[in-house]
Image (cartoon, rainbow, N blue to C red):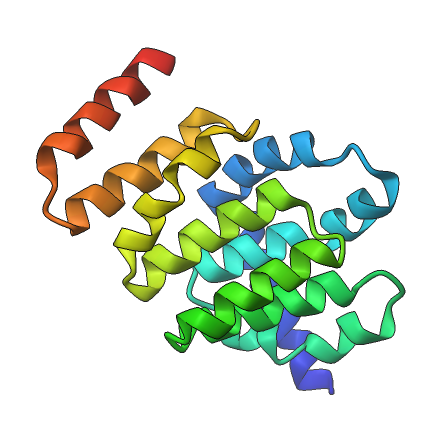
Length: 173
């Protein structure tokens, strides 16, 4: 048990020092509308996103039991399971668990961003492009959406579309 807690502390230190932490904090500010959800987000959203970005989901996924013990944390547990499934390239089940997390109260916009990042990390850029319209209809910052789309287009070999999105990104900066 002590080893797990030490790993969680180590992961927390790595997360706090990352650039992704700063970027995610800006996104999180938009998600804190519902007080119940905001409490859960304060504890877990940064951890999910940054653990994924740092390729440290194994350590976080091993802590699932913590989420099960806390009221309202079912959505967080579903999200961890979804991220774990996508890391293992089980897209169908991972996507289904993202939907289950949203139905359980996980904020839809944050779930969508996590899904897009997870799909890119798992090697599914075409699915990220398929999420384009859905992401653009949200209040997610374009500065967060466009880099994902640029990467997805490039991984698909669609350079002209990547350049078009880069131009849109420059226009909003």
